[in-house]
Length: 69
Image (cartoon, rainbow, N blue to C red; front, side, top):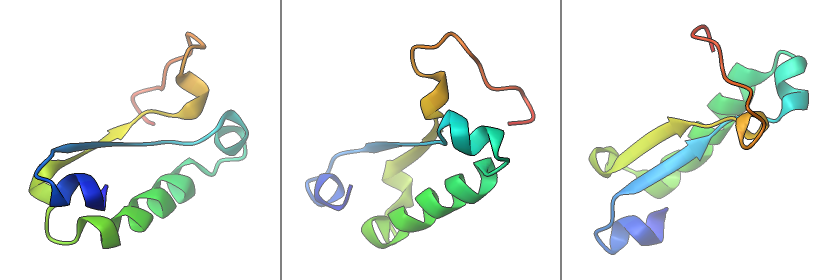
């Protein structure tokens, strides 16, 4: 992320939980932890970053997140 931003690129950072984390009720905890981990790399450059919620469990499974998620 930091390298892409340093070279003038826009970044789409995908965050999201596994099925196990979802079923354990840890979605918010995982997403918070992932977002927090990005902060040092992004610094004050948030205008060039999009956070996309793309849970691992939804990729290629046909399952979708509910509006509450």
